[in-house]
Picture 1 (cartoon, one colour):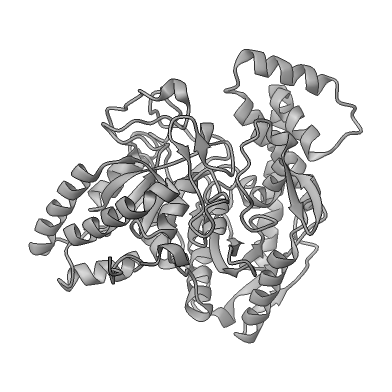
Picture 2 (tube, one colour):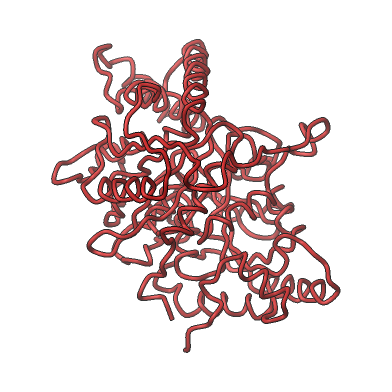
Length: 490
């Protein structure tokens, strides 16, 4: 089948084409559906199809476009991570026991997308309980990377990143606590934005079968994914803002504008590696190249600064706080095992694995002490952002690795420049933004010698989400961005 001119266009470009009557919403939906039907047997990104309702929404969008109605996402096809509640579709989080759970109301972010005219075509695959950088589960099977089917697309928003890379619509919704927006974006060569903590309300992005109550789940955020930086802002602006059931009764969102509008005005700190979790030659190389290009464009670039919080200390703190949150939902027998193992740890063991174990079993008293340490960390970042506008750093230490579905992630290994490292220790790089709750934009910067995508994250100041987003936009404009995978560029 001949390649469609629309399959890999950005949401901004498609909105302009819809407004100019060059294409209809139904044609865009049919194009994305056609690609899913042709290619998804190989990738398995879309685990729940909703084509009939999607086409009905597209027809409604065309009627509104004909009347001159203006809405931010009007007529744009998109996909949504399986973990979001959509009325009438299953929400399992990849958990077999929840395969029949079907919510009766949309998540708040889904309502906002629909109100903005978005055309939802289906849900994208996730790992079990959203807890991996692979995307496989017993309910829906394994999702593969469109650039190499033998490798992970990342996780836990791996179905969303694979869907974007394969041309199944220009936008997707994901979530992030351990890099689950940024890691799949990195592995599939697309864009993602982890918003400032609690900027986007999470109601209805809830593990089944829990009630969709307003709740800021510690460290966790939901956010946009796309094939271009400007598209991230379009989707973020649609879903951000307080929940009308609670904070929205008294507060309105007013994000500050980006700090600058040109590369030459930005002051950036660039970090390429750290002994806690080294990056490989390819990842370091792409960061060095980006830093050199930014300097040529007039950006003020520093490669080290005493203002950067201690990476080893903050990584250990993040491991404890993350696992404390996640262990709250462990079955009693697993939790009891973690408590016993943590009690047996010698105090001298400050490895990241030991801190994860301590976090699982820590008392509320110790958690509160860690929370104070996090408040001090936020203060350190505030100081840093008086000197710099953004920090550019790795997302993961290597490009996408082969599928690894072994049960115990602590026993998995990742190879970095010929040496083995503990798989979950890779959490350190996503954690640099997650622990202090800072906004971080993931963007592609090129490919490894064997054709696998690589990229970086831009960490910005608290609630200044528009600053890393703008910098990502400028970098995309100046140096290029997404390139479709060869096997699916038809």
